[in-house]
Amino acid sequence: MEPGNGGDKAQPLGTVACVLTGASRGLGRSLALALCSRVRGPGSCFLLLARSAEGLAGVAGELRAACPGLEVRCEAVDLGTEEGLRRAERSARELPQGQERLLLIHNAGSLGDLSKTFVGFTNPTEVNNYLAFNVTSAMCLTSAVLGTFTKRTALRRVVVNISSLCALKPYKSFSLYCSGKAARDMMFQVLAAEEPDVRVLNYAPGSLDTDMFQQVCTDSVDPEVRHHFQNMKDSGTVLDCKVSAEKLVNLLLVDSFQSGAHIDFYDA
Ligand code: NDP
Image 1 (cartoon, helix red, strand yellow):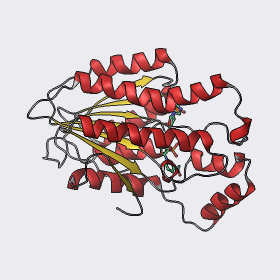
Image 2: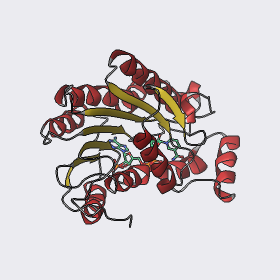
Image 3: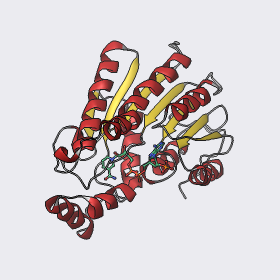
Image 4: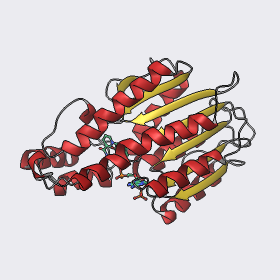
């Protein structure tokens, strides 16, 4: 359990409205816990989004225990569907306002089918479904949240896209994943250019010991990729999510990144 923050003590992030996708497990859970130890509980509110109601409830319980006074709301939604996206947007619109900081963190993501290479993707519905979750939902949720938490002098608005080295570098069997991550990075660079008062960060969190990482080791059709990922795991170079989450929180606290930048865990 991460340290509690003692409720009414001044905390470096102040009061925060935080919308976090993929909050039920993996990096999302660690991010929620790392953030909540830096926010002032009373007046702050976290909205946790993912499909698993049970996973979200578990993380919400941990947050409430670690951060007295923090309001935690959960919405179990599939962000790959229009209905799920609309429910997420509605929940964001219903959040209480008046905080010092808005933090929107797009952490949810998926790898797509790794058992195929590029030329195996012949079904447009499969590709569109992948992009609906990994690209479209991030764009529309951002627009809804920024349209709700509108520009105000006392409000610092921050949007984080959880990116990857795969946004910059091709990997065999990752045609969907690399394309989605590259599209998201550029999308958020455009947001940074258009909205100078919004702080935008593309954060590549490094190799993390999560379900997603394990999926690459078992499912990639490419033996080189499978072995490369498995070797990282066996040699202990895969990061604990907590370590990467702390680095992101530190980047947000120092707040010196150029808006729209792509910052990798290993370079930060
Ligand atoms: P996990 O697969 O462990 O977790 C993914 C999260 O996204 C879960 O909370 C999951 O919850 C949620 N999610 C998945 N599908 C949907 C959906 N359709 N709608 C709503 N939520 C969904 O991934 P990681 O924690 O490893 O990854 C987190 C982020 O970090 C991702 O963006 C990933 O691309 C990125 N990243 C990860 C790396 C790694 O090595 N693991 C390396 C570089 C980047 P639920 O199942 O409850 O819906």
